Every structure is written in C-alpha cells, then in structure tokens.
Amino acid sequence: MTTGRGMAAVAPLLLMVLLVLSGASPMGAHHRHRERWEEGEGEWRPEEEEGKGGPGRGLFVLDKVEKVVESEGGQVHVVRGQLWPPAYVAPWQQGGWSTACREGLMHIGFITMEPKTLFVPQYIDSNLILFVQRGEVRVGWVHKAELVEKRLKMGDVLHIDAGSTFYMVNTGKGQRLQVICSIDASDSAGFGSPYQSFYLGGAGKQTSVLGGFDPRILVTAFNTTYEEMARIFMAKSGGPIVHYTADEPGSEEHGQGDKRDGRDKQGMENKPWRQVGRGDEDERGNGQWTWSWRKLMGNFGGASSNAAQVNKKKSSDKTVRAPEPYNLFDHDPSFRNDHGWSVAIDRHHYEPLGHSDIGVYLVNLTAGSMMAPHVNPRATEYGVVLGGEGVIQVVFPNGTLAMSATVRAGDVFWIPRFFPFTQVASRGGPFEFFGFTTSARRNRPQFLAGATSVLRAMLGPELSAGFGVPEEKLREAVKAQEEAVILPSLPEKEPRVIRQVAKE
Image (tube, rainbow, N blue to C red; front, side):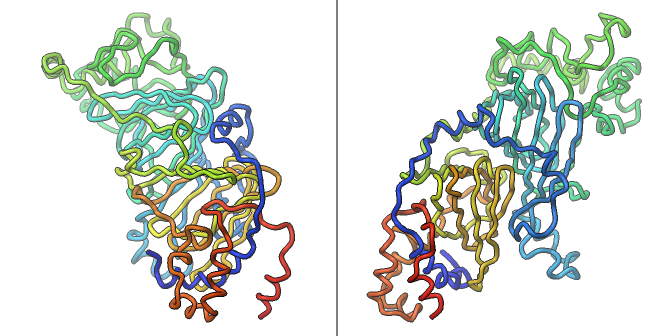
C-alpha cells in the first residue's frame, strides 16, 4: 500500500491522465532485442563517459563513473548508488546513521573483457548479480565447497554470493564481453572503494591474499616446498583481467557430476592451469611448471586428508548442483501490449535472488510510449539504459517535480522507494532499459494512471472529496484511459484544456 506521503502526489499526477491520447505504434518484438545487441547497437563506451559527473543531469541520474579495474584484458567501471535522503542534507549525522542507511544501497558495475581473457579467481565483499549484456562467458564459482561452472549467453542472469570465489572467461569468438552487475553495498567492508576484491592469484598491483602469510605458514598449510611456493607467488601477472588461452571447444559445464579436461569431481587435473605471460616453460622446466593452482589447492590440508576425502566422495557419489542461470529473453514477458513489454523476475522465478534480496527487470517501450506513472511500494529501483532515448520524470512526496531528465544508452538512474515516476520513450525509436530493485519479493507497483490504477480502485465519494471535485467529473477523467501499465504516445502538442485547468 502507498503511504500518505505517496498519495499526496496523486493530485498533480491526475493531470497527466488527460495528457494520454489514443495512438498506434508498432510493437517491439521481445526476441528482436537480442538481435539488435548482436549487431552492436547501443554499446556503452566508458571512455566517453569517464569524468562527466557533476550536477546538471538530474537529481536521480547517476553519472559519476569510477574505473576500479584497469588491466591488459579489460576494465571494470562502477557507478555508485546513493542514499536517500542524500548524506549532504545532514552531514553532522553521517557518523551516527550512515551504517544503518547502507541497507539497500546498491552500486552498478560494468565489466568489459576483450576476447580470450580471464577475470582471475577472486572473491569480493558484496553479493553479485551478473547480467550478460553482450557476448558469452564461462563463470566458475565455489558452490557448497565444490567448483561449479556455467556457460552464460546474452540475457542470462546469475547470482554469486558475497565471499564465494569465482572467475570469468570470455568464450565469445572474437567478441568483446560486456556484463552489467549489481553490487550489494549493504555487506561491503566499507574501505572507500565500491567493493573490495580479494584475489587468490597475483594481479598486478594487487597481490594474492595468500602472499601476506609467513612463508613457513604457507609451506605447512599447502604441504609443499619453498621452491614450489616461490614459483606460484613470484610469477608475474598482467592484472586482474589477463589474456588466457584454453581449449574451449568440446568443454562442458562442471559441477554436475561430469569430468572435463582431465579433471574429476575432486578438482584434480592432468593438465596445467596457468595464465598467459607467466614465463616460458623452458625457463622453469617442462616437468616442474605443470604445477598449478588446482594442484596446489588439492594439497591444502595434507595428502592423507585429501585422499580420505576422495574415497569418501567416491563411496557417496554425490553430485553438486547449482541453480541454472535465468535468461530474460527465453521467458515470456510479465506484461505486454501494443506499446511495449516488460519482464520482472524475483525469488519466485530465480531462487538465488532471495539470497541478496534483489530483483531484476527489463523494459522495452515502443517509440513515444510511456510507462504509466507509478510507485514502487517495496523497493528502490536502479536502471541502465540499454538503447534508445527517453525522459524520466520523478515527483517529490509534496507533489512537486523532482526531476525531468533525458537519458540515453549507458546512463544510470535510480528511483527512491515510494517516489512517483514515469519513463517516456522518444519518438525516434524504442526505449530499452534494464535494472535491479532492492527487494526480491514481488514488487506489485501501484499505478497512478491507466486501467489498473489505484484511482480506479478507489473511485467513490471519498476520493472525489479528496480532490474537491464532483464524483462524476472525477470518474470521467479517471476512466478515460483504457490502456494499462504501458500507455500510448504522448500528444505532440499540449492540449488547450490542460493549460486552462492548470491556470485555474
């Protein structure tokens, strides 16, 4: 249900009901979205956006881009989320309530990887939800103490828990990989960076978290020698995202009880795992450099203990199964009409979303159409414009306009919980945006206009008395719009009757 403050914004929004006239526009087919991205439309170019932050874009447009990873094989940019009310409203209170207000705070990350590259194994202090915007990727992560690998394609959504070690390999043939991710800041360690990475392998300026231990501790823990440990920790790396060669054809997903590349379910292998650029085999000896991270980890805890675990698993023959990724394009839209469609997934569609309490959505508006003014009663919304151009309007609780901003591909916006807002596509083409909400429950937005609006549900003497108009006049205005959720095009010119009503 909306709060009293939210309902205070209903009166001025009633005028927007009269702005909507019947119109026809071709429907943007759900499956064509993937085809357009494969052709290269709407590519986000962080080098063009870098440093364009500052006031003027709009209160709820997030345009401060931070480059948090710069490597030979790719980059990671982050757009920080904001708290509401903003911290600068009461700076003397920051120390008192800033920690509590981190709940629900989210940052938006953009991962770009060149062909044949690896995002090295690491874990971070935040929950991640990955959305493959373009390309294909193989993601490996530790699930219930076992390695699981999944191949993701365009439109796939995958959740990785905070603290779970993972890596990513760009498997697209000659294609740059682009991933949009939500970064749940509520669990972040808060060291100043949007998130904190803990690399297992050396990565440029970032050394392995294991490298900080005393060498005697490592030799004992891994049950190995000083020479073998030196080969691992003194090897050079090209950064967090490195060029990587692997025999991709014929490989299968791991973690479903299969064997892949000579490895069995216990993670032991017959082939070496190493990054390109760590030195020639001739310098280290062909036989010795077959030592790898997987073999090193296999020794952790002692050989006898590892053998006991192998025998135990062979006898039980258990299989580790992780949830499959959820593809937004392979499922029917949650809503669709002649003016566009939308997809919204929550924990009921994809159970892992409940781990971080985050939802995912994708909206496609045809040229000129608009999302009916509405309120999110359960969540703050973050969005990324994937293609096209449109206008976002947000209203303050007191009924005044908070923002009316034009956004384009690559722009990031956010809508605080309970604030009325609408998105309107330009007449030049479809307007597509993807995003996250800070709740994995069904959001059930409250629409303020259209056939399914709360005004229609509340039509009666009480509502008419609240507006101070005869019930018959109010009923006529509220029921004039027969469409719901996604409405037809705005009129090219403002109707004269609206100007007259506004003057009164």
